[in-house]
Length: 281
Image (cartoon, rainbow, N blue to C red; front, top):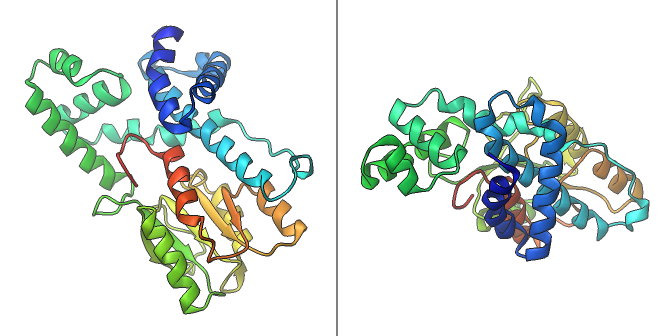
């Protein structure tokens, strides 16, 4: 696939994320620049578009994170955080690996439509089956993938909330905001093993979680291969040292007030940066 074809395929998704034509163009250009540097590492050229889509969302997530933190501290006070968007692509492409476990019709229709960038009509021609059958295969395949990749059985992404320092009223506020954003919230406790489950699409950490801090759990997430790229909302103090530590640990959102009225809206934008073809969290 040529760069022009990639640009045309990525443009609608970039525009949907940024909601601004100039920002969308910049995002696509940045994505193609990353591709130019790493193109030789893509073993299957047919997966170029899928890789680019993951990189596109990773780049947009970085932009969201940086814009949010600029409102917390002046930009010149934020230390650099080394982060290569390409390093997160393999995790995003777990979708491609999971396809191998699906029945052949579902696998090929999903591969054609989502990874190959073909339309329903083009997929119909490529697979030699009628449109209704293709749509049914896509629906069944999406549902199977949703379960395999850890989405909640009702089709809403699971959000695990860990906090021991909140009163019940505060927990209810956060629970409600997470639910309003389209997630399925679950008040959770850290397992004895200390290993967090990999079934969540979002982690929410209070300042204290039992004998641990939310920052410790954030660092554990970023160091865990299976969940390293899962979005994290961290609540903590307004101390400058705490804010800088959370920034360097790559919290996606840092808040000092669990009752923040902006939480639901922030989560919706954060979900959009991580969505992989679904229509909602």
